[in-house]
Image (cartoon, rainbow, N blue to C red; front, top):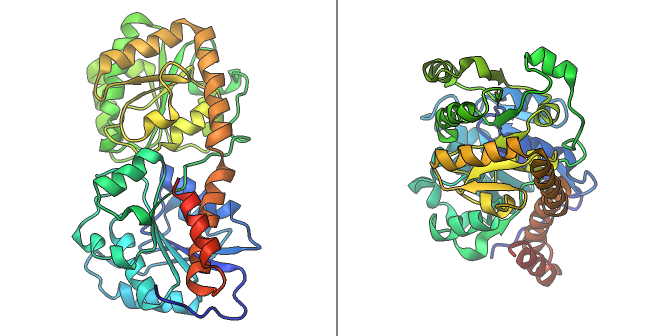
Length: 396
């Protein structure tokens, strides 16, 4: 293993998170929360958005140094020189790339050239759109670790993506359980949303992207309305598919009951207006929206994809359906709408589970321990046993 001589004044560690840009999404929200909670006595975080900041990039730029404009287009090879220069100028100790694609490749390669002691890549999905191609696989040897968000996700990275088992670590997604907490129904908010106070509501919080399959959500809504004609459906999130989804809602005859709310900053309040929260995704790792909804005391219904079954325990804090099984999804949601006591009981169990296993504090601690343990192993002559012990603990 390569040894690095740390500067005498290296405290706290300077950590650079490399992204392409930061739209409003689950992985980006997690990154913002992680950066905000890192112990500033031990870590000094910075962000590099290779292309442009994006909405959440602009948010975090008010709190930590943000570097952008390094990549003009996908064929701009000068990005490597710019990124190496940036890393050296900022005297970075650890580079963490977020997601696959260009940031995963250029970020790790630049870190290697700049002799950064710690090189990590955090992944938040299984397959498309975060496909890990041949070029990114070629840099496995220079990568200290691949960070998964759940046990099943770690298995996927080992068995499907083929990353070495000793380089796969788990930092479970976490949410702010104080911010996402149960609260009473808000009549004023419902009035603004044009939803009757006593109307049953079903919601989905997800960017309007193909893999989230909102078309299926609309078909499920159509089925539910046959049983509960008074139901309303909230779609929180935005994206290029919005016009097509609005057309689909009209074609299915559900447009009057579906509310496209776009990107919102009051998601905790909106979740508490939903009697049932759902996802209809084709693929997931460990969705943040499930953790947020359960923390808010809402029961959840989702397909059995990715690592969802690690968080959502069928019949205990919600229900799991076979992927693409719209009938089962609809039946579970109607059951919960018709049985408020059951819904409340499952929601309470969901919050208890998130508080115990998926808090934001636990996620942050996992990142802190992993970064620090690898740095010690590579840079400090007395840290080998302690660092290796910490990394083994993190992988379990």
